[in-house]
Amino acid sequence: MPNIKQDNRTYYRQLYIKIEPGQIYAFIPGTIIDIFVKKGQKVKKGTPLCTLHAMKMDNEISSPIDGIVQAINIKKDQIVSKNDVLIMISSEDVSEKQKEQKEEKAPLKEKKEKK
Image (cartoon, rainbow, N blue to C red):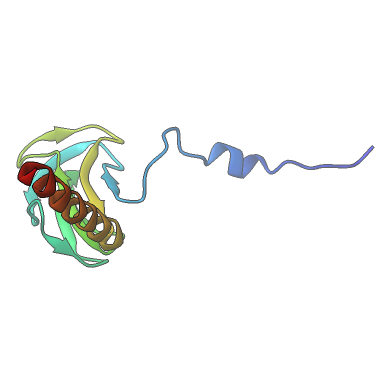
């Protein structure tokens, strides 16, 4: 019989929820102190997004990727729970493809209207 050892540490360290790359979530329960970005704003990796006050500390949450802010699900002075999605960011490649698709669809509508 093969001797297979399972590493229990990696099993227990897995997240309970699946998080998409552009989802910025609360890693700890706390209160949103300030929001530094607006919807539609371009951000670079490391750009401060918001400040989360938890356990008597202000934690500055930064962008993990380059992209465009798609949604802001929080307000100033809002209390958030662990794993709440605060801000959603799409990569620039995805947003550019969406714009191109919209531009391609727009001429088709115009052609139909002319007929």
